[in-house]
Amino acid sequence: MESIEKKIEKLSELVNNLLETVVLTLKYVDDYCRKNNIPLLNDDRITYLVRETLRLIEELNEEAHSPPKRQHRFRTPPDSTEP
Image 1 (cartoon, rainbow, N blue to C red):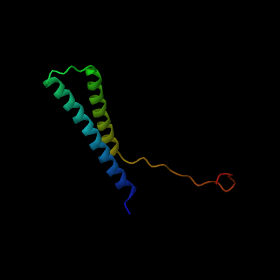
Image 2: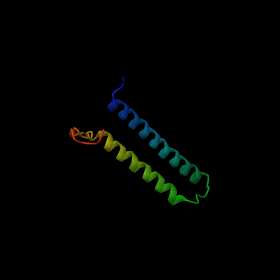
Image 3: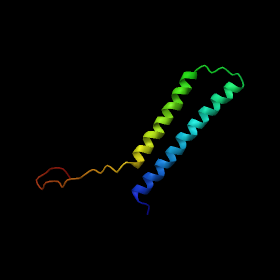
Image 4: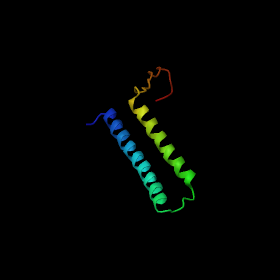
């Protein structure tokens, strides 16, 4: 059975690949439109999407390489009504 850390690492890598694909797709559309003199109605929006995607990649990489944040579960006192 795969450990939770391995699964998280694998998912992180997949999300990173997906975001990089989004960036490359947006850049391709932008380059294609400029090369073929196709006006981009939302040029600022494409630029924003590329920057936001790159920011998400950076944030994801930072999170993936930071130490895990573990939650401590304290023992429930005997007189507690919680299960």
